[in-house]
Length: 631
Image 1 (cartoon, rainbow, N blue to C red):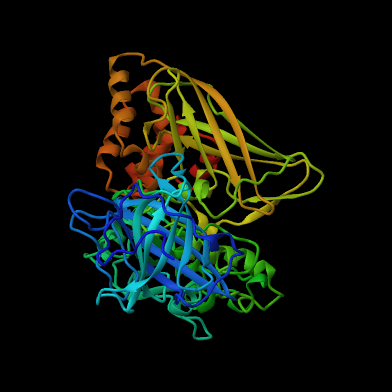
Image 2: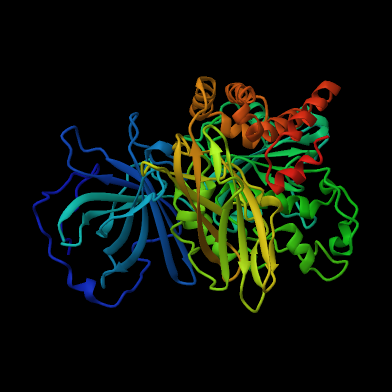
């Protein structure tokens, strides 16, 4: 009862003009059978279309099939076949090149025929493209599959094969599905550490990374790299230093097109947060690759407070359970997971879990698993969302296909106001963001509402109608918590805007409109918008115009502003040039002072220079508070 005869292997494309009849059994109630041996795990998917150059697969990918309590759930991804040819089957989860990623497949039906020797397999494809709206829904497709002999390379004797049909029943392709692994995904976690800093390898109960990721059907291999990385900056590591050190310390053969390799860096202390951080959220850092690395701080002193229970007063690295839990949490961020406060699992924050414990019992209340929704993410979100080097963290937050972040809360009001309504060409723009609770009860909101909180993004529309989007380059997720905003209360956070993924946000003189979107992760969650306008004035003279051109055209200025470090020489040169221009000096003075401090310069002359810069600096209230520690 095959609508189109199955071809020999390798499959040949049938006559595309043939319109096969729809089998009568497809109208019967959905049922599942083990006759086709639909075992859980990863299946290699080959997609064939008629091509003049031969009959090899045009696309390849993986299909993840999960069986729970008699119910099947599946998802898949398609990649263009690389120039070097198709990936040959092997007894492991296949890995494809990131730039070849093409489609996500949301499986909507797996229905067996009454005889059990055929199956209808239906899916909703989503085509991926870079940009603000990366997922384009395409027409649904289905295939009628049956078992045929497999090539010797497959770990099993049979594969599923059949014709792909569109919604009108037209045959458009052939596919084969061959089981290759009991795991749904596979990855490598490399852990490197500063000398004398411990690695988080197991909890006090003996559970390891393998136990946690076996539970979500991942084949995670943990490898120890360099455990004697030289310390920097007196043990206090900035995000830029973490990223630079990761590139030096990790396995030099790392190729994210060949393996999914996440990196955990264990250091004494972190400059930008307390316990842990995923420090390359977006991928506009030195090597332009998002979600590779996370870090934890072994020497963070756990406060001597009752909520910290049996680990109060210890250094973090000596508290085995919370130290390991935080490490898994940060790698979860690298895998695209956001905070989840619905239980005490890995993606809640350490502080919240400590607050939830009975007095004196933390960390005994730690839940050593991923919340169900987070486990679904790890199993079934698109590869490009989960794998290192795929979508930037904040793009995932806005465009995940499985998660729902579009809920609202009517009592919350978001407003935005620039620090200066008029700024000169070539100056960064500082904007205050205020969230007000006008309701009668408290509302749970993210603790960090600025760009570093991971929940804010937006766009800038210029005088000629051109639109550029922005979001954060980094996040302080590891230290973030949800807090309650009391009735009638408001909270204000400040952000500095300069560049987005498409370049300078304020590239010329004229009136600009800034639109902001705040997506909260509390319960029940919310999405709020606000906008404001400001005027950018033209250059005052030729020197001003040249400095502005240098600043606006230099892409290194933004990562230098965010990450600091020493890798962005061109960005530093552009900012120094701005300090020579009277109209720009005050707008860049705070940033220049912070860069001097981040570089760890202790000479008296340098400290005097910082003081001079701050005296004339235009600063937001947040920057003013931070500047108090500079001198």
